[in-house]
Image (cartoon, rainbow, N blue to C red; front, side, top):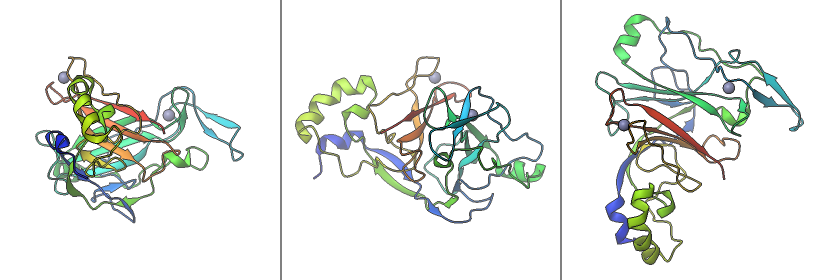
Length: 255
Ligand SMILES: [Zn+2]
Ligand SMILES: [Zn+2]
């Protein structure tokens, strides 16, 4: 059932549709090798107090900061995701994170976001061997299965008013509540999807970040579902396109 009130909230998204495969460093991928400059150090998580579960699921091993390489999560080439607004001169987006469990949060944290220029990176030489954490140095649920992507543009809607930024919520809650009877999910809400742009696929009530300049940030990426994420919700990346340098932030939520 289509809810006319939702039409005004339509946003363009690109569904990434990961499928397990063998993506190379010059492919858009989830969990594949990244196109990484040979002369740039690979990131290692420097957080104190990150750890991994033992085999029995209860004991855990603490891992010293700086010892474990971050894992590739997402790589997007502009040619595959024409709907995504890349910063000037950049045509590759890369997201990595630490695959250990952290004290503050039960999921993967400390993501890193990089924008690159493909031609410049190739010209400067590419890292041949991507460091990967060894057995026992990661939580399986936090490491995406290497997957190729089939990016597909789509219309996206918030799943409910609970997923709107607060200032929009006030306007929209009464309208959506009466239109939907309070519980209906609009058919075009891609709420369990790894995607670029559109609405964050929150599994919890929204927690939109603001930049230091006080702007409501825009949703850039949702990574969810496909990789289990410890039976949890998703990781959401936001950015402010009003501020110089496009500051970014991230959120994580659980079922
Ligand atoms: Zn860590
Ligand atoms: Zn800003």
